[in-house]
Length: 50
Image 1 (cartoon, rainbow, N blue to C red):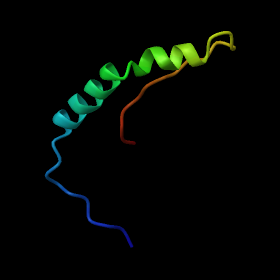
Image 2: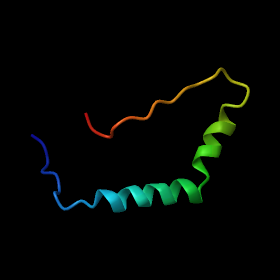
Image 3: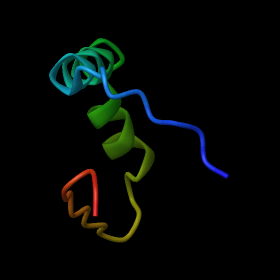
Image 4: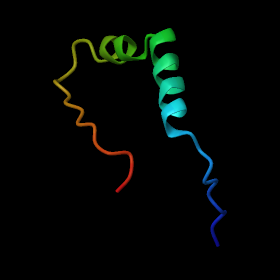
């Protein structure tokens, strides 16, 4: 029913890659700019897994 999950994932390295992508592409500022003039929006970040 489900595909087996690779247990050799390096989560620290994956997080670093995502952070690098966000910084290189200025993702946080783009998100702010897209909502300019809109109602206030609050984003609550939480754990990546339940």
